[in-house]
Image (cartoon, rainbow, N blue to C red):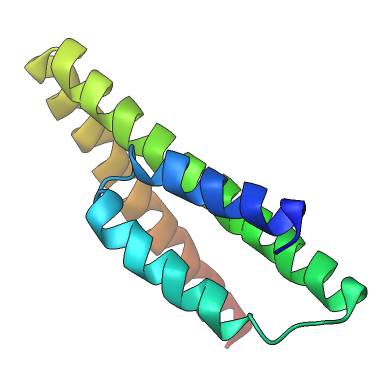
Length: 108
């Protein structure tokens, strides 16, 4: 096994500890994915697979950061602010829907 591949596997497991579904979810998925790619022999194919794996690790980190942000936001933002933000979001969606309806009528 190449050191790049081994390093990628370790990264998956390290990031998997903080993943919202946990390491118990990540480990079997990663193991299965690695075994599916075990037949790769060409160095260029291995580089492509490792690059895709690194991208997946970055995506997992993004999910983890989003979870942490939402938890922190929920914990430290007052309830009144949540209600205000929800109201603003609903108003913005209704404005967008009205704008889209107006555009559709103009096209006709």
